[in-house]
Length: 322
Image 1: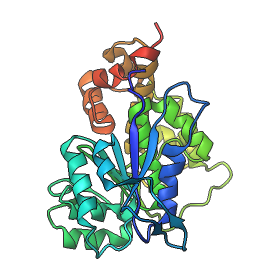
Image 2: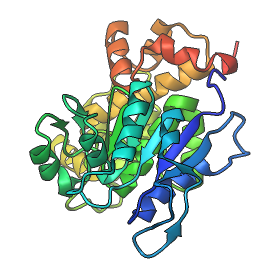
Image 3: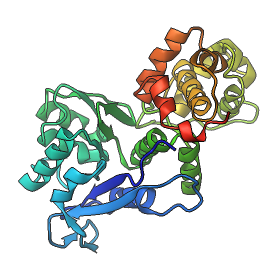
Image 4: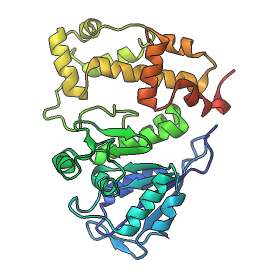
C-alpha cells in the first residue's frame, strides 16, 4: 500500500462542542480496525488547554493543545458552537499553519465558519448546513458558497453539510487515502451507504415511497451491473416500469440527483476499483467503466477523484494484482 502510515488525524475540541459531530470523527478515524489489512490513522484530539464542556453537559479534556494542529496530516473541525462568533486566535493560527504546510482540513456542518474566519475559503467553493448557507454567503461574500450538496472539496479543504453529511465526507477522505474497497468496509461497519454523491441534495422535502414493481432502488442495483456499456435514461425507466418523466421525478426525489450525474460518478467508482486492483491500462479502464473516450474519462476522473488516474493508481501499487 502506497499510503504512508500512520496518517495523523487531529480533531478539534472547544467549549460548547457539538458532541455528535465530534463523535463521528472519533468513531471513523479513531477506532482501531483490525479487520482491515491496510494500516490505519493515528487519531489525536486538540483543545484549548483546559477541559471543555460539550452541548449536553459532557466534560472533555483534550490530550494536546492547538499547537499540534500543524503536525496533522488531516485536521477535522466539528460543528462550530456559534456561527456569529469568531474562533480564538490560537485555533485560527493552528489552522493557518496546517494549511500553509499543505495539510488537508475537513469541516463538519458549521465548522465551515471556522475556516471562513481563518480566511481559508476566500475565492473557493465551500458548503455548510443548509440552514446557515444564507449567513455564510452574506458574512463572507468572497466564498463561492455551494448550496444543496453534501460536501465540497476545493484544494485540500473539504467542507460538508449537516451531521449525516459528515459521514459522507469522512468516507470520501478514506476513499482518497485507502481506496474504495476499504471505504466500503468502513461504511458497512457503520451500517451506512458506501457512497452518497457529494453533489446530492442536503435536504429532500418529501422522499418518495417505493411501490411494488416501481422501485428506483432496484434500478440502481441493476445499473451498477451495466456500467461497462452505454445506458440511456429510457432504458432505466423501462426497467423500472415507469415513463421517463415519472422516472426522472422519482429518481430526483429518491437520490437528490439526476440519472446522468449518478451514472457518471458510479462509473468513476468502478474505475477506481479497477485502478486499485488491476494492471489494465487507462484506455481499458475507461472502456470497462463505460466512457465513450479516454479524454472524457480523464476529465471526469480528475473532477471526482481530485487527481489524474495514473496518480490515483500509484497510491495502490502494492495491492495491484499482476
